[in-house]
Structure formats: C-alpha cells, structure tokens
Amino acid sequence: MKRTIIRIDSEKCDGCGLCVSACHEGAIELRNGKAVLAKEQHCDGLGACLGDCPQGAITLEERDAPAFEEPSTVPAVVAVPVDKEACGCGDKLPVFGAGGCPGSRVRLQENVVPAPTMSRMGTEGGLPGKVNASDLAHWPVQLHLVPGRAPFFGDHELVVLSTCAPVASADVHWRFLRGRAVVIACPKLDRTETYVEKLASILAQNPIPKIQVVRMSVPCCGGLTHIVRDALRQSGRTDLIVEEVTVDLDGTILSTRPLV
Image (cartoon, rainbow, N blue to C red; front, side, top):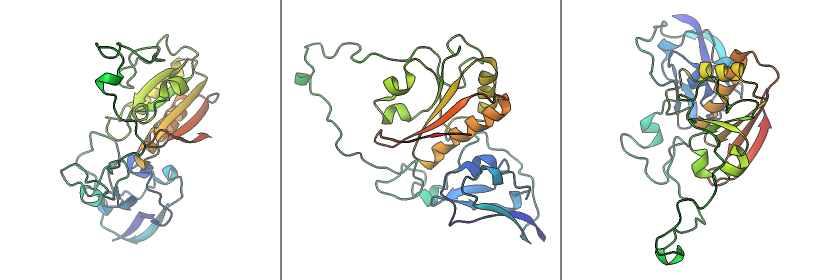
C-alpha cells in the first residue's frame, strides 16, 4: 500500500542515534554506524523523529510500504538498540579492532602510565586510604536515586555527567564537580524512560542557574544531551544557561558549546 513513511539519508546521517531514542515504536536501528528504518511496519509516518535529527537526514515521503502495525511490546530500556551482527560482537564481547558501533568497539589507549609496583608505592603498608581529595559534595548522584528537591542542588550549577566520563578523564573532579551538584546517567544502558520527567522536576523545583552536560565522544552518548533538552522544555525554564562538553576516550576535552 502507498502511505507516508520516513526516509533516512545515509549520506547526511552521522550515527548519533538520537532518532532511535525518539522513535517510540522501535522502527529505527543503528547499523554500521548509520541509522536505518529497520522495521517499516512499525513506522507510523507521523515524523516525530524528524526534529531530533541534528543533520536533517530524515524526511517524509509517500511510497509503497507495509501497513502500519502497532508494536505489541515497548522496549523496557529506551536507549539505542545495537545490531549485534553489524557491530561484530554477536553474543560475545567485541573483538579488538572490530568496526561497527563506536561505543562498544575495543581500543587500547597509547602512553598509559603503568601501574605502580610495591617498591614505588613509598610505604610498606601501601598507599594511604586517599591520595587525591574528592570534589564530590553530596550523595546520591545517580539520576534515578537523587530526590527532585534537595539542599545540595540549591543555586549551584548542575553537571549531568555520563557514566563513562569520570573513567576516561582524570580531570573530572576539579574541572566539573568542584562547587557543583552532579547527577550521573547513561543514555544507552540505563532505564531512561523516567529520566526526562525526573530531570525536569529537578530543574523546576531548584534555582539551578546553569547545566553542563558532560558526555563522551561516542555517538550513543549524544542521547544524554537529548534527555537534557527535553527536560529543559518540560520544566518551562527559559533562564538556564546550558552547555555541552564532549570528552574524548583519552580524556581530552574536544569541545564546549552552548545548547539552545
């Protein structure tokens, strides 16, 4: 039958995965680093995903396609599905040097400092309980666990931190956490269906002046920015300053840009 359905321009697509999260019917998947309409029968043709594509790669067209079928189940985790065959991992861990999903591709970092031997630790009992001071000012930090209103939010700036960023960058504490409140989330592996509402509630109930989204450079981490944008709209706040900071796999800050 001829009906309205989306079209994805693979030349324009950069594999960010935002359209995958925006498609509530689960019709779009990432394959070989590109978004594809994998299940035409689950595309309702309403184009809810169009506004989420930063590259303008998605359009609507009239063509022959299977009739729309309402999905019988909705994925419990609203995240970026991964085509296991395309990313080369199957049911096992990804092999070293494999292509596919940038977020799960195995790589080794260069110039990594070796672990200290006992003779280099300085004391017979090993290192003290804490070598570097923590700049974490409150607990909890996981977005599911923090309350909607808390004294540690107050009028402090808020860092929305990807789960992997503190592991990739040794600078996270002094660069981002010092003097700020923080919530941690993973847009790919967490159960994210309540995240927009939760974050919107935090923004609405606390006089937070600024948000820094600290994400990794892998495409799937862009979903964190997407969550913050939606929460900002839902909160009704128009006075917030919002920035996105992108951290590379070796901890380098690649960019800092304002979000509107």
